[in-house]
Image 1: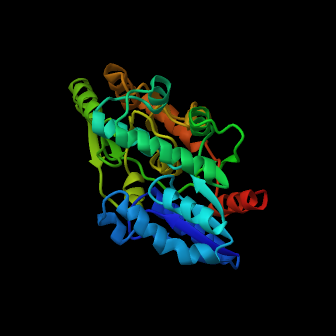
Image 2: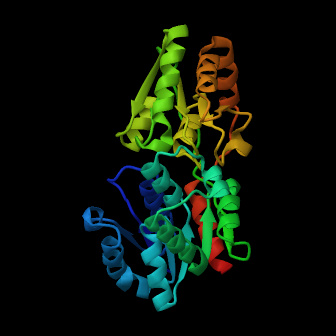
Image 3: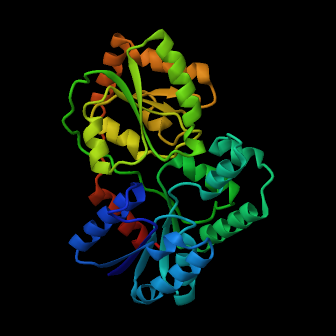
Length: 334
């Protein structure tokens, strides 16, 4: 088949969608498909709207030749890709990676709401945010299929965009084979991610400062710019990882920690809670004192040994080959 993959970022860009696009493209090529990858280049410097129009025209030639189109987000590339696919009558599968509307609302308003609370409470939106909702709704209702990484995310989106009769699928993230890890030389907790409001960094810093008064041995390392390979290497020798986001749908950061048999502290507002609830330590992202206690809980040698044993015993894998199989199976059923 001729397959077009639409993605906002692609290596050497750093980020989950870049790795996702690269790996499924390689798998599809191995099967004899002709694969074109269209990522943002000049568009990164363009204002919203203009970059969507530019990207629309950029992908149109490949779209005309494509048998299948895979878009790896809903707004940046998903919106122009769905418009183009409708124009030339092509099947398009859209992967709902995050939630652009919720992220932009948190970033602009500073209102620290979880993803679920945002849709349950339906706060007053600006004109631009209402437009984002409408355009997202258009994408959801005009693509051939929607792919989510967790049931948790699928339920939230399907309920709030009335998608009960649409083609909705769950394709889990990449769960890799275990990698060799090393004993930590210090009690360092690693946070890695974009320094944006929804990652809850200020509360994490406050909680860690309080925890250090009771246990000076612990240390917090915040990483915002590092390649995936460098981060994975650093993780092999750390003590634990921590991700206190307001919500985090299916963070690859946590899956990389599990591969390295490192205990983790994660927000309970995540699609991973059902699968990993007995494996890691979970926190209420709005409860500073609760975060303090869980940091100190994991700093205890006995508790640490128990949770390292639990993480080590988690053997589930989901390869890029299986992920690609999932997408091709979805295509066959459209």
